[in-house]
Structures are given as structure tokens and as C-alpha cells.
Length: 383
Ligand SMILES: [Zn+2]
Image 1 (cartoon, rainbow, N blue to C red):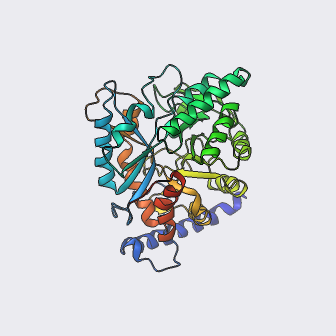
Image 2 (image 1 turned 120 degrees about the vertical axis):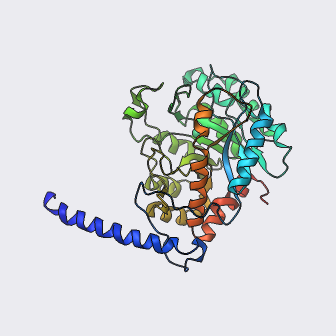
Image 3 (image 1 turned 30 degrees about the vertical axis):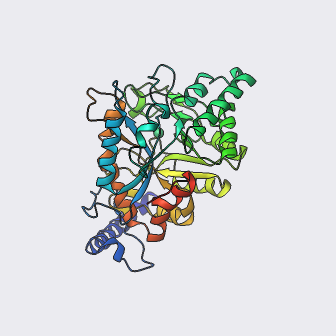
């Protein structure tokens, strides 16, 4: 094989030149003016984003947005920040959800604390609940032997009540959630934990989705050095087999697997998503389109162009993808530091990259991924 390498390098260099030329040509004309049937340009990894367009052609829906109200619980301030950013980046409606919380974290992060504030902006918001309450219960019962019939009953009742109070579904729930920074928890229970199965049954009965944070690990792996300093164990458990079992448990429970397109560990590939989507009609993926500098894998947008494997998958399963930027909207009154404030610094590159991404999808796919799928999945009216 080594003897073939020089020829391979030459071939790759030639391809990159062609790609560069195509890219310049594509930049010279508006993305929407691309002749039908021509493939979107593919750029080299690490190449800077092209400056235009700042906005996708269509106002879009963000199904994964968090509010940071700080110790003073300034939820109104966080919502004002959100509306300002939504207007700036063309987001017509956002689904607000609490981050996945475990015991030992503040208890203020669930929909009961801020749902009423969202009503000040009719038509701009919907919300999910359970990330601050149900997720806590699941992880408290990490040992499945502790899940008695009474625990199941109380959990199902709490889940039903969240929906009765207006939630469009459950989230953000966590199976494996690695710690990415100080104060950001490590969480793990398998996705087929008995309480996840109860939640799937409630979600199926009420026809609402579950937003699931599940960092993809295929077969277990050592924790990458990048995450070794945080609250993570030295090895990470397999998560994929249990995800398959959750999806199979109740095919009517719609699972929205979060953070496609910016994978911290490497196993959330387009091929893995495709295999699962082919096998399970109840699997959806929300895309967190990473900015050009983000140190993540399996990016859908590499530089300014669509990754070809993602482009094929998005076209093949165009009804199963939504946009979930995982933006953190911080009230202007909040001072100090914390994971939400750290993550908020990534909002602008992600939101810019999302508009780049949507403007490079074929228009019919962009319309589905950007808004129509979210409207159907979360049963929201999108202006
Ligand atoms: Zn998440």
C-alpha cells in the first residue's frame, strides 16, 4: 500500500484544486441560483466560512435552545436575549428546553420556572419539560433494581403532568452526557433504562417527542484526552446497543437524538445514523451545526460546504431531521461564569454556520429540515 501513497497524494491535491475552483464559482453566484441537479460544493476541512449569506432564505425553527437566567432567575431577561438573537439569525420559532440536570445541581432549571414568560412572545416559542426533573429521577435510579412499581407510577404521573402544563414533549433527557467543561456534569444510564422505557410509553400515548442527549460510543472507549480533565471516568460505556433497544421498545415513541453534526466522540457518523433510521422509523436527529473552529467530529458543514455523506443522508431521510442549535441564551443581568455562559460564546458561530448550512441544502430539503419537520414533530404552528 505504501507504494501507492505518492499517487494518492497527487490525486487528493488535484481534487482539492477542483473543489477550490468549484467553490469560488459557487461563491460568485447566490446559493439559490444554483442550477437544479448540481451538487452543492464541498470544501476542505478547516477552510473559513464564506461570508455570505448571513441568513437562510426561509425563517427556520430551532428545536433545541436553552435559557440561562442566573441565580436571580432572570428568565424574562434570557427570553429577551433569545428574541434578539432569533430576529438576528432568522429563527421564527424556538423550542426551549431545560438542560439535563442531576442531583446536586440547582433545581430551578425546568419548564415550570419559565414557561409563562415565553407567552409574552406569541408564536415565537414552544417548550419541552423534564430535563430538570424527570432526568434527575432517572439518574437517581441509575441502578435499575431500585425502580419499583411505585417509582414507575410516580414517574409516569410526573411526565403526564409536564404535558398537561403545555410542554410539547420531553427534554433534554440524557443517557450518556460527557462533561465538556468544569461544572458540566458526567451522566450515564443506558437508553433502555426502565424509566426511559416508561417515558417512551407516555410519549407514544400522548404523541410527543423525547429530546435525547446520547453521546455516541460504539462498543466502549477510553475517554479522549481532551475530556480527561473533567468529571468523566477513564473509559466510556457503549451507548449504541441500548439506543437501538429504546427505539425498538415502542415504535410509536419518537426519539429526537440531539447534536447530530457536532459529535464530541466520533461514533455519530452519517453511516450510523442512516443504519438506525433505516431500521427505526421513530428515530429523528436534531442537527447542531458546528462553527468552523469547533473541535468536534462528523461535521455536516466542513468549511463552507456540505459534507457529501451528510448531503446524501439528508436527502434520503429528509423527513427525519430538524435543526437544534443548542444555543444558550443568557440574560444580560447575569454576571459570573458557568457552563451555560461558556457555551453561549459559541452561539454566534453556530447560528451563522446553521444559516450557511440551510442555504446550501436543496430548497425542498431545507424547507423540511428547517421548518416543516419541526412543525409536524412538535405540533407547532410556524409563521
Ligand atoms: Zn445536549
